[in-house]
Amino acid sequence: MVSGWLLKPAGSMASNPPIQKALLHHVFFWLKEPENPAVRKQFEAAVNKLFSIEQVGLYHLGVPASTEQRDVVDHSYTYSMLISFASTDDQNAYQVHPVHLKFVEENSHLWHKVVVYDSVDSSF
Image (cartoon, rainbow, N blue to C red):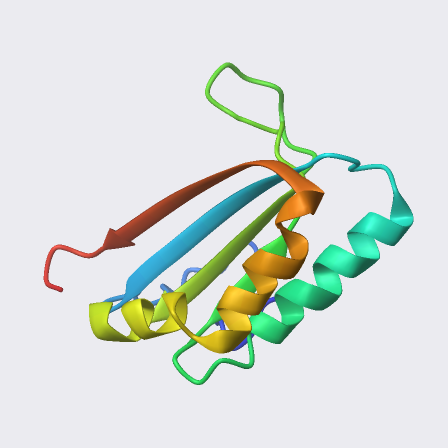
């Protein structure tokens, strides 16, 4: 599920503009019971509520792609979530937003590991 991202057709010579002036918040989740449909349904419903937080810009919830197995590719996670924020202040507000706090409180029992990568472009 991608919201608002422009993707060029395969083989297109057109170039997409880079994502600039944004903080990208990439979160990887390893669920305790990744094969349990009820767990997955609960997790996905809970994550989708996060996307309603007003500071959230573009977002994506995904699962590992069926790409080539290589030493540098990690397919071990259950879900990845990518959210863009217009500013560090927006990301900070998201972290303490009641919807986010409720998400963590009510769903942290579903995962055994979470890894977060936050990045900004060099002009941020």
